[in-house]
Length: 68
Image (cartoon, rainbow, N blue to C red; front, side, top):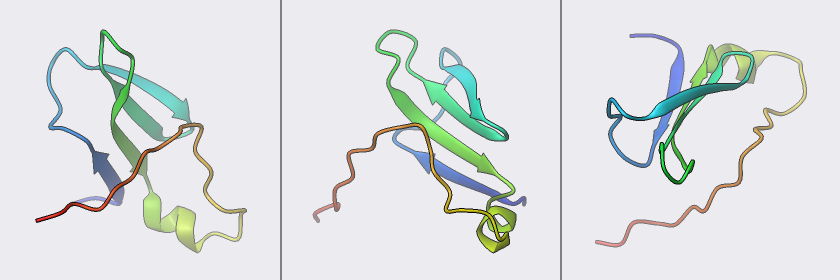
């Protein structure tokens, strides 16, 4: 559909607050805890192919493998 990388901790919902944290990088925040629940990086493949520095985001992530 587009050149967007979506990272979702949960499905988007109407009450989430959106904030552009960098050019064309959008976060969706929990309105109470302000925790990042979704991240959208627009023009993702163009960013990877550019000669600029590595893509750095102003967030902290806790990543784990899903166990079956």
